[in-house]
Length: 290
Image 1 (spheres, rainbow, N blue to C red):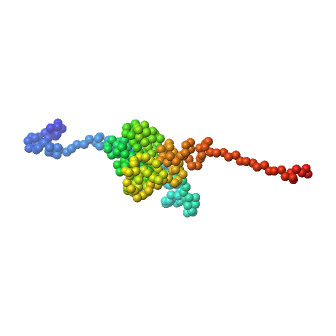
Image 2 (image 1 turned 135 degrees about the vertical axis):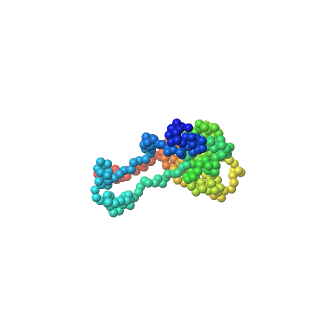
């Protein structure tokens, strides 16, 4: 029995009664519990656990007294003003328009790192002996919510040990170098949002199209699809997938010594044709002295 409890019971004359008839668990309820005021007064929350509310209109020493930070008179003090309100006249965004809010040429690529691909292979969720496309990546839950395509990045490239044959929308130079160093290959090809949806539904071939010459797999293994996989029509997309540095699937269309650009010619590949200046035949009028 604690000494404080024993002294309290002895002073009240109940020590013999308590120790003989009352079970020990009930001893704590026979006397009032004591709390130290010093502990209760020192309780506080962690620093910066909450922000102290600003008390407005409580005198000039607070910094938000008198006008409470609203200033003197006017609509901004007496009421609320909508964002962009210009005094009732035509708003600026209507007069001048909103420009630069959206880039029409941007694409929403889903990032995919090499360490995650290798982890999926180690778990048996991806088969490295077959070509890995967007269809396999989505079905194995390696990527999700693909919109315009998937871009392969080189994070965790030191973990890549399996030779991969991957067909993907885009890939960084470091990721391409890491996969090729492991004995694999990377092919980038063009996809649209509608084509990705049809690929996941099993209506479109995820690799081959009319302009492609990808040699992964044999034609006998390919099933018959009802929809055709599109090829790029925009200049920027054509230039990207014609570039051998990007391992584009249209790089076979480039002539030797030519660059992927459709706008700029490769220096030294053009032909220069000198203009011939025809000399006028001297007429009898030109021989006159006067």
